[in-house]
Every structure is written in structure tokens, then in C-alpha cells.
Image (cartoon, rainbow, N blue to C red; front, side):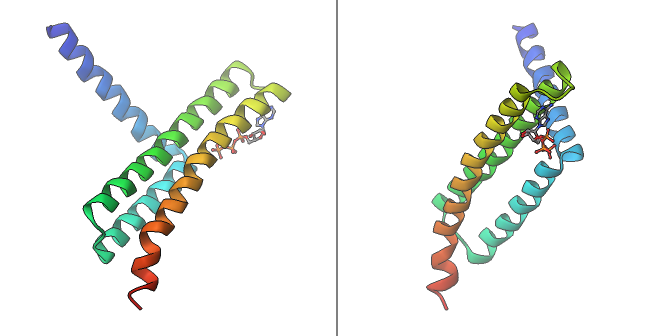
Length: 122
Ligand SMILES: Nc1ncnc2c1ncn2[C@@H]1O[C@H](COP(=O)(O)OP(=O)(O)OP(=O)(O)O)[C@@H](O)[C@H]1O
């Protein structure tokens, strides 16, 4: 039981270290973090509902999580095959495509949430 608890705490520590590395070194994650802060400010400004907060937070988490996994895939690809290879290109494109899906949905969610606040209250 003790090993189980210390193992989980260690695992959490590694995960936090990984999240910090992403924020420190990855420009795409940094940009998404800034966007996350901006929409959070917008959430307070427009006083969005609890449900909208939950969906917005979910969208932020999905985008940053997908981007983090994309970075991991890119790093693995560069590690196992640093030189140019058509298959590495396809693997990286597919990983980027997965982020695109999530990001597109997040943008649509953002429009659905904020369109009424911006245009119906004018
Ligand atoms: N080793 C490679 N072999 C073939 N094509 C590659 C290779 N490396 C990158 N590419 C192509 O270039 C694109 C960009 O790859 P890269 O690793 O530079 O990602 P990136 O979008 O610049 O990532 P980031 O800016 O998040 O670090 C890939 O999606 C792929 O099409």
C-alpha cells in the first residue's frame, strides 16, 4: 500500500515535470496557454455560466493535452529517425492532424459560447 501511494506521488511529480517542460520549451503550447488565459479572462468578463465554464475548461484541456501528445510523438519520431523519411513525415502529419481536430472543435465551442454574449448584448 505504501509503495502504491509513493509510486503514484512520484508519477504525479514526473507528470508535473513534463507539463513544465512543455510550457518552458514548446512554442505551440505557450501560444495555447496564452489563448487559454485570454479566454479565461473573457469568461470572467462576460460572466459565462457554470456549464459554459466546464465546456471551456474541457476544450482548453483537450487542446493542450493533444498538443502535448503531438510534441511527444514528434520527439519520438526525431529520436528513432533523425533523418528525413517519408513515413516520419506521415507520422508527424497525422499527429498534427489530431491536434487540428481538437483545436477546430475548440474554436467552434468558443464561437458558440461567446457569439451571443458579444452580439446579442449590443
Ligand atoms: N524527419 C522527417 N522526415 C520527413 N518529413 C518530416 C520530418 N520532420 C518533419 N517533417 C515534415 O515537416 C512537418 C513539420 O515537422 P516538425 O517536426 O518540424 O514539426 P513542427 O510543426 O515544426 O513542430 P513544432 O513547431 O510543434 O515543434 C511534419 O509534419 C512533416 O510533414
